[in-house]
Amino acid sequence: MEEHDEADIEGEIRDEVLDPEREARRRIALAQIRQYPDAALKMKARPVIEFDDELQSLVERMKLLMHDANGIGLAATQVGVLRRLFVFQPGEEEVLAVVNPEITERSEETDVADEGCLSIQGITVPVERSLEVTLVGKDEKGDDVHYELDGYAARCVQHETDHLDGLLMIDRTTPEARREALGVLRPRIVHS
Ligand SMILES: [Zn+2]
Image (tube, rainbow, N blue to C red; front, side, top):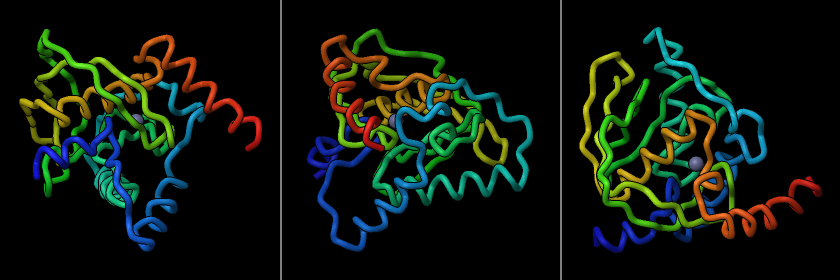
């Protein structure tokens, strides 16, 4: 079961068919997430200094959006907030917020897998990532957190940390895959 689930996860999205109500929720959530080529997606986020009520509401909103959008990760820049935090779901249940995240260690061993992104719908591109990472930062209350991650969770936090630096999966893929992805994305932009 676990392995099957992992196979259906691409970067920060779950690739699965939803019932009509969940599909409607997904579309509503995606409409609230910045879509490529929105300028916010290319910007570097600033560190969070205050762990106040505003931050708590932002985290709650991001967790809901991520869930409804059928994602396993969502960075603040994707909702147009240029602050360093993301939410992610490393397992079946728990959803975590990581504020001022830093990847302090990466395994030299890497793998290449297709990633999707809630801000670049309908595209997957191969991205090489470290298999294991150490992630440190704060939770939404300001307490220190430290995670040793592997598998799709390690891939996801590398994808989310990139978002906070204005980097997208299409900036990390092969030149061929990037060209192909942009070929799909450009006509959409012209028509929107
Ligand atoms: Zn993304």
